[in-house]
Image 1 (tube, one colour):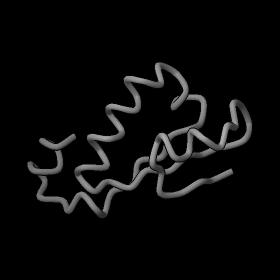
Image 2: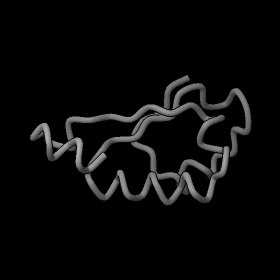
Image 3: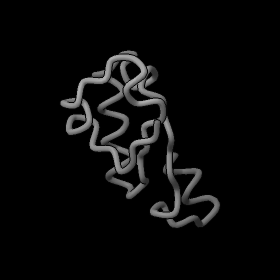
Length: 70
């Protein structure tokens, strides 16, 4: 992702990655690591379909998302 941003001279803070709650919960530990890397690059993170599956509010803090969609 970082290489793509650099190759196209995109400001990372203009990008938003939207993931569903189900995707976040699959292999949560490795997903968390990847999301932290994206956040460090100033990419915004959104969760879509929140509350349709696991819906544990503590995960919102753990994943540091910027937006919640339902």
